[in-house]
Amino acid sequence: MSESNIDSLSIGDRVIDTEDDDPNEGIVIARPPKQTIQDWEFPTSEGPMTTADTNPKYPANTQLVIISFRSDLNDYWEDWRDTDPEDLLEGVEDNSVHRYGFPEPRLTPVVESESQLRQDEKSTDQEAILELYKPIIERLEQNEFTVEYEADTQALQVEKYGVEHTITRDGTVLGESGIKNRVESIVNRFL
Image (cartoon, rainbow, N blue to C red; front, side, top):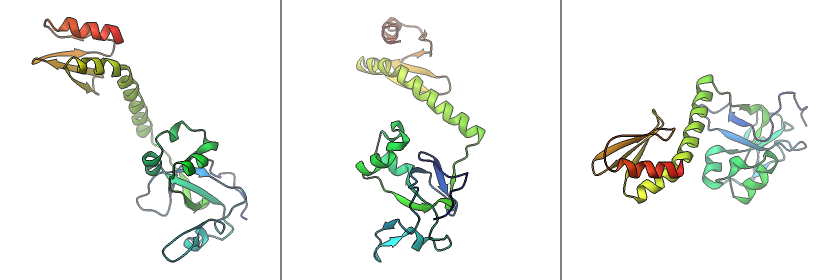
């Protein structure tokens, strides 16, 4: 078995395949300390093969890392993000998510740029704001209002009978008409 290096991957790490020109993001679900790429066997149309068979440029005793691709996790296991890293392998097995064995040196952690981090933070903010608006949106739609969320202003655009109102993040209702009172009463009840 190869010596473990200081920069070894951990369960839950986001990784990509360094040999793929357009890699999909994977999540490390296992790094069995005593398993190598010659130990991981999987079925193929030509019969069983090992990760060592499909990665001949790596020594057979290279550390094995098992990943699932993020897209597969999203498709087969809705709650995977809320799972503790040590429970990922069991959850992947329970939810029939595809698993792939890789030589550890073939994988590299995903490094996000500052703009990607800001975009992720913005997405999280958007989700939190939409969650805040959710009961208001549902009640307005029950009252036959058309509701659209404007991401740029983080406000709701509400329309009924051709009359538009804006609901700001702090709950202020902008617009004029007799139905403004109805919009305000819904907002005040849920915000």
